[in-house]
Amino acid sequence: MTMTPRLRKFALTAHVASSVGWLGAVAAFLALAVVGLTSQDAQTVRGAYLVMEPAAWLVLVPLAFASLLTGIVQSLGTRWGLFRHYWVLFKLLITVFATIVLLIYMETFSFMAGVAADPSADLGVVRNASPGLHAVLALLLLLVATVLAVYKPRGMTRYGRRKQQEERRNKESG
Image 1 (cartoon, rainbow, N blue to C red):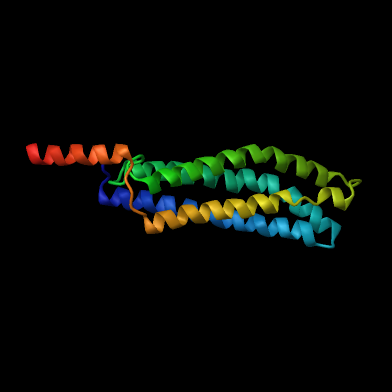
Image 2: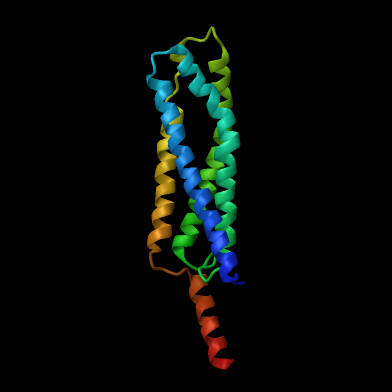
């Protein structure tokens, strides 16, 4: 299935916007994590961890799913295909992996918000390096996916080579 040029551009725009948005949201979460770890103001520390859970549900999770969905649509509707080129397959795996980790991590956000909401909890207990570590790792993964999308390294999968041979045979016989 190939998309019309107008639809292809729309799908590409949606994919780039959601993917770049996800990358930017992860960078903002890294900033929140740094604030939570370094601020000397107790309310600011608690606020950083309190805002992470709802912001993750309202921003990170929707952008992760939008990036995944638009990436699949984009690959299925273009010559790149979903399983034809290693770079597309690796981007898919990175996006699926990052989305799954994010969904699992949502429980941690909830726990941290609960601790931060407890005014009797010591700031040493409220502070947590985990969001910073996860944000750095997510940024690295998303940047690798971005590099793959821009450079499109060569290399077709076995499925891709087989499909390419089928297409050549169909052109020659048709």
